[in-house]
Amino acid sequence: MITPAFDLSQDPEYLMLNIRVPYTRTSEFDIYIDGTDFKFYAKPYFLRLSLPGRIVEDGREKAKFDIDKGLFTLRVPKETTGEHFEGLQMLTSLLAPKGSRSAQPLVEDLSTEGCGESEGDDEDEDEEEFDWQVEQEVYKESSEEELKALQKYGFGNQRSGVFVRLQEELSDVADVKNPDGTTAAERRQARLEAEASAFSADHYLADLFEDDEIKGLLNFRPWWTKLSPSTEQEEEAAVSFTDDEKEQLRKFTNRSYLLDKTSRYQVWLSLVDILLAHSYEVRSTEGEHNVESPWTIRKLSGTLCWLETYSSVQDVLVSFGRRVLCYPLYRHFAMVSAAVRDTAKILQSGKACVLKCLLDIHKVFRENDPAYILNDLYITDYCIWIQRVKSRKMAALGATLQKASLRKKDLELELEELEEAATMVAEEEEEEEEEEQGASNSAPISHGDSSSSSSSSSSDSSDESEESEAEGQGCTESNEGGGGGGGEMCKDNPLELQPTSPITQEPTSTLFSEERKVDTLPSASAGSRQLIQELGERVAEELKISQDSSYGAERDCSQPSRAAAKTEVTSGRNSSGTLLELSPRRNPLLIVQTQE
Image 1: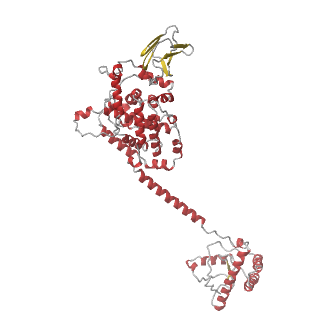
Image 2: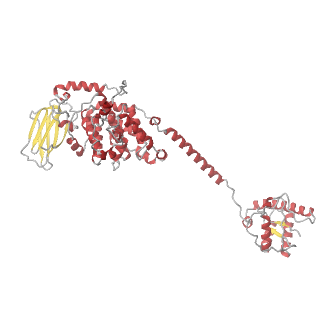
């Protein structure tokens, strides 16, 4: 017999069932209605449902069949008008017949019986009063045989010996080397050591200071942020399942789970851990899964990667925060905080929202070759178990998660010290750059040669002519006082020569033009004009400048005694001539007289 695809909806008076039965004979339909039991038969399809409320067959029911679509629609009146049937989206729990919901053939779950409903309600009330604080117990030394028997993992720590048969797939699924032979404490210690060795300070600082892409991810709004249900009825209406998700729910084998208080507490905490990893993956890919999605979800969840069991909500947050900063592409603390807020929102939105996230994880793992083992160990059981819990319990857990605080120092990765050192280095680099820019802006501007200086403004020429006049008079007095004692220069203004190219011969017309330019200056004195006139007459009559003499003068002046206050310039070829040398300043000309 084939179980058909179906879904249920309701209004205050009727329960609507949509059953898809293609390729069936329209003349053969059998419907059975009795309280909470509903049965439908149309060869080769058979559907049996255990409804959360009672329906009646009183003549108001209506049915129609769309042959083209193969869709059978049935409207059945409720026994109590206005009653709300809870959990109509939990298709797996609706398929189970009464009295056979236990996974153990020799153990019967009495809470599922009609006579045991009050007992189940009492159990629910006890779970509501559950204290989320860490429970302390007196330490008891266990024997080696007991320790070996306690190496369990999976949903509710109910599995063992799985990886003994799957050694080849173990390395692709979990990071723990020997899960069947290591205790929970050993797995936790190995996880902490692996995280410490995997942490990269360079990667963390790069994401911290270059966070343009991460800011875009933080602005992303997942689909659950649009949910704001205030009641369970609004919650069921707000969350809708796709056809693939409904098909997967029908494929699940319904079972019940006998969990003690400790196991139930660990199941809730592991659920938070898995949802945190899923929230990060959805935000980092902006809701579009890729080939890295199975690895990301598995790697960020200590439950899936190290088969970890937690003792408090804070332990879950610390483990998740450390793994986010050690393994994925985006390693930013703000991504951790965003995932915590997303998970709290998912839990507060009710079990339908949680179930949809679990089905998404189940699909991601189902399409990845080694990760399907994690579906068998955890995700499938969570998809079945979550359908039978109360939404208000998840809302209480979401409120606890929302109040929890996670700081950087809780991760024990020295993040604050690392950020402080990086900030200091960045500030020092900025100061050095500012100093370099200031030095380049304050660098002196080099002056041009004598030809460019001759075309400067009138104010500059006036100042230079005054300096030239003072220097000329000082040198004249020095020459007259020295008698025939040689060509000493003025000591107050020693000649400073630069290692420039050899002096080139200037035409006489250039000198006379310079004479005329200086003569026209209004601030030029009579002494300076007379000096320049004498210079022009000497040049016109007897001045001869040779290439060799200029080279000799330059060689003599380039010796270590260049900066001395007194400099002697000699010429070996022309003893009676006068050597003309350029001044580094923009003065008209200086006369240097050689020794005979």
